[in-house]
Length: 582
Image 1 (cartoon, rainbow, N blue to C red):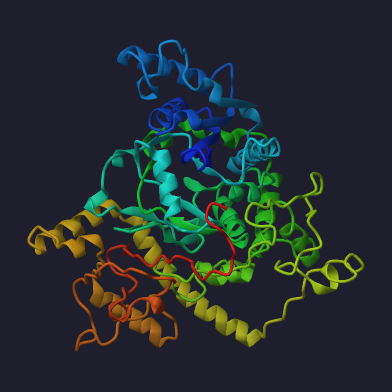
Image 2: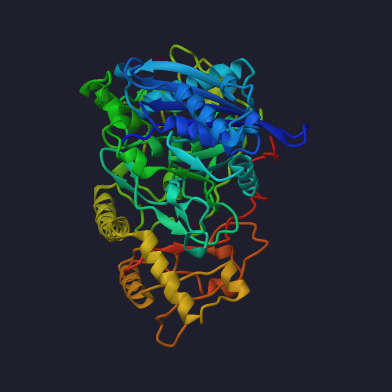
């Protein structure tokens, strides 16, 4: 089922009492919930007059209602019910449709629809045109969601404040947001939030088996797993990494493709630690019209070419075999960035793209992970690369020495005299390859069991029951430090036995096994960890000594892993010379 894309850009002007301007590109496909989303967007914002909305409306005008017109009707009704006044009451009586002049429509007939990436790509082009006209600044904020959403009061300021907590100019907040029935609630009393960190392989790479995080003190660094359900960042991220419009008919593969491009450009993806934007899953999934893009103008050959393009970009089977052609695509407008390499991405994410394995070593990357440094572009964070509009080849060449594409024989003295060719790959010994594949298969099987258990369970109900049981055991009341940060280990004995068996088979574990906790070597129950402060790096090895001895094992038992961590790190030692607020 296709969920329509919304993009919001928030322009921050610190000189004007921290005021900001919001530009909001929105893509819809005959979605009857779009007008309501606009209503909530404006009426619940702290600064509604700072919002600008660009709508890519894919529908049949003679049959479908117009999103903007229906929004105006809703606001008129709200004004009649409340007597009018400010935006939250429908606007002043003299305004027939509050904020109408802040909404811009790009109309596309539904028969021309070609899937989510094609539509989001059109939004990206609109955004670039606005940037050229100085209507968008790289230092604006951009948010993209679906078109059937609800928001917490003053959501706009809350999202900016949450982004600030990352202390990272290259931060992208992203997740699959909670359902609208969680509006105004603290899930399970522990600020539980969805956490993306695992994938599965279908025809492409697909985000899979969402885990949960609890009581996070700030957004948590992820292993480069991005979700289209919510994405919030500075606008230089959206301008540098627009959605590839040359992939009609694609659904699976869209998210990790963009995640890879974000990450190689130097961006880091974080799980939001609080919920301010929510999704109407029942309302959207029960409406067959919202998936009507599948009847648009694209063929089976178009879809095949889309798969070829995505596979080529990520070195996956089924991509281009000619390394020169593949390199041209990777360096093109919708290719990879040049701040980090694809090899670094594979190691950091733990996903074996080249062999279509969900893990390279039998472990996931859902816990504490180490941030990967990079060298910022010499022209700074606000620099937006230029490409040929026809060929989409880079215009900012020769590459500088900080680029991963830099070749001294091409980009150094005498640049242009030697053709740019892809580096040759070392051939792997056949016996080594067989041994590696055997270990990968075993690790993959164990990892798949965990993912299937997680995907098949009701996470919220299980977590609620577990929280209730723990609270009862504590006498109905938690101490102050325990309520701030708590790590739960359920079914620990079984998980350790399984983990030790895997470790004996030379499959590494993440997190490492607990050692010396009890005489039996098998920990039981749960551990309470006091808040962790002043951490400058990610990873278990950088935790305080007293915390290292009780680091949480990966849960392979009945319950899904529950992560509550403060191991985010402030990135003070990053080699990128990024500055706060650009």
